[in-house]
Image 1 (cartoon, rainbow, N blue to C red):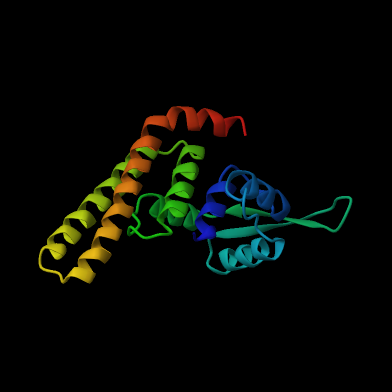
Image 2 (image 1 turned 90 degrees about the horizontal axis):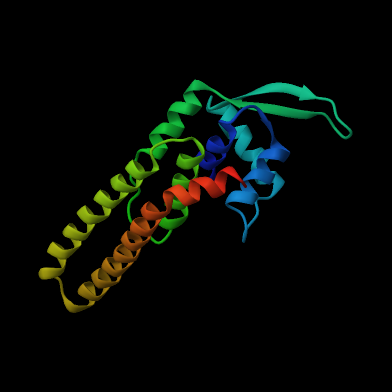
Length: 175
């Protein structure tokens, strides 16, 4: 999963420190694999370089001064484009689609529309694979069957998630 858009989404609630951003990310997405602080700060540096966020300056505290970061309009545009672009069905899709769904709910965006866009992309890919399968040799048909079964599993997840959006939104607001 590309962590940059997910981090941008978590930052849209208002200016934040790298430490708080890492804690929020780990609480929402990093249960099994928390982000290293180095990864957070390297990603923040790339986002500054790309004009997606700005550093607001340092704030004195108990320890070293902590920089606060804020999403720019360019960053918000980048995030909106990411949220409304279907991902190509692939083994890593679920991580990215999960992140898009959570960020969409956190932003009070239309998560149902996001899932519909992805569903349409999946169905189109299934049609392409089904056509290709008809004339493929046996080993290629076997690979196509694997891809089709993966897409079917993704579609079941999309349908289940669509049915639970209200409950997921409530749980995220209390996290």
